[in-house]
Length: 395
Ligand SMILES: Cc1cc2nc3c(=O)[nH]c(=O)nc-3n(C[C@H](O)[C@H](O)[C@H](O)COP(=O)(O)OP(=O)(O)OC[C@H]3O[C@@H](n4cnc5c(N)ncnc54)[C@H](O)[C@@H]3O)c2cc1C
Image (cartoon, rainbow, N blue to C red; front, side, top):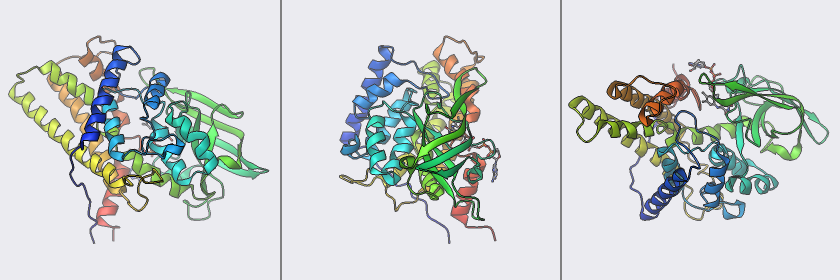
């Protein structure tokens, strides 16, 4: 039996359109004031901008008010994210908390954890990173070797994480680790712990990107004590908890809009009368963007728990992992189509120190191009997931 996929269409209601214009105006003013500069490739960590966005109520927008949220819709959150991406505004200081950690705490965290972390995330004052990957556990995440042993009042953590984006600036991260030996089912015995990054026994080392930039880290744990009240959800249920986060990570506009500002600069460069070849490419890219946007928006709308929902988390009963994987797979290839079109039509040599905006965006996009089909699930792994879900297991 084939599974259906659902990307139903919709238009923005007036309230979302008003928010769109408000966010757009805010970002324009902050850029003019010099709060941030547009850079493509990796979203930057800008604590000042995140605090200002938090003060506007645009972080944790869907969360309950008692945890610092606004009880707004997923559509509003989509609109806000889209505007940030349209100008490549730096989001790393609030991104992971807003998209993944916050919703996980709402669903699985204790009342004390929610009270301690959620309002601070929503104010843009507390940054989370993600501690999943290890040297031998990326796509095969259940192979994690970082382990926590039971001690009086908590857990003693030893091991290593890698590729931790902005781990050198974040305050804390969720660490996926093994709390019980592998008993045959590798998904059992995994747990999520909150590790605050300044605590004793945690060492953060940079991994420099090929242009010299520092986004990634490897993080080592040497007998790190994690008290019981930093266990997220239930011990042994880490796998189930983390897989629900991944659908959130894969379906948003950040999966097809990271090269959008390059597309805008390309249009500016081509001017009002592009030739036939350019017109055809622009048409194709515009249609691609429109389709991906509808798909991503449909997922945001389907996950929306509806007005006044107490939980502020996505509808638990809906499984859109296949749809999310489709958006990420198609979206990351779409981002590269923009780079290819810019290379073909822009007729410039990419240069690292270019002063022209189009040239700089093109260079930054080319340097960062390999990352999008890796982070958040590689192309091959996503396609396996899609094939298994849509076609069923191989006989
Ligand atoms: C920009 C960026 C930011 C990141 N940030 C973080 C972060 O903050 N926190 C974090 O924990 N991780 C982070 N990661 C790590 C990311 O999640 C992993 O890179 C990703 O899961 C792939 O794992 P890997 O690098 O170990 O590659 P591998 O899993 O070793 O894959 C190598 C190649 O083998 C292929 N492959 C693997 N398994 C299969 C299979 N079963 N079938 C077919 N092909 C397969 C893959 O598709 C890939 O092409 C980040 C990565 C990037 C690029």
